[in-house]
Length: 240
Image 1 (spheres, helix red, strand yellow):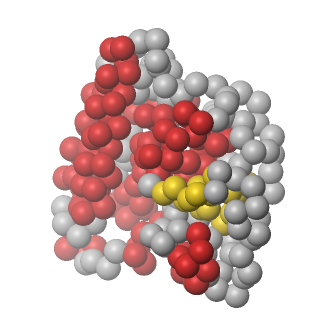
Image 2 (tube, one colour):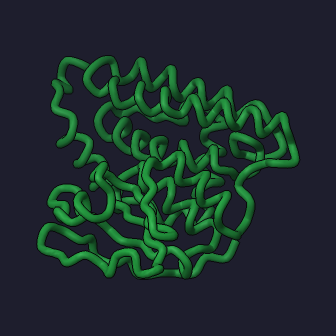
């Protein structure tokens, strides 16, 4: 799918004025390193909606007061300003973009078996993400083994493509930001290679990194590693 390059606007912080809210512009509020926001950003890009959905970066370390007061009371990213209302929650938003905007389909509507498996995977992703995040204060490698083994097995279900449903879909988009960031973190801190002994996962990562709509959303690995180390204060020595 052709991708049109765009310059990312600088993130807005507590000193920034708000955009002209509810003026008919559709805006996607993101943070450029948030894996939750990245899900919706990828979906927007892949569907070719750069001209229809304006990207607005938010500095989560120094977020503007108006974001909570006037845009999204949840005060998190992502959120989408569309048709006079604001919607949040990344899994809801990727489905919303699929249902309410044009562009290549990201749901296998013509295949009930794939659609059902996709729904199961979209339900499980909450467990996948939660387990990995919780493990940063517990047995990180054990959780990584369990969750990436789960993904490896899921990737064996369909053999007509490298993705979770064979062809690229919302399911891949739901998982990839967290796979990407934990791959960086686990490698940096534990010298743990998530693709070792997992050929399907290795092929999945190789192929998805050819999708420009995804690649342009990736944060600097050094920034990701530093952010994870800063965010989760725990004794690395005890786990190595």
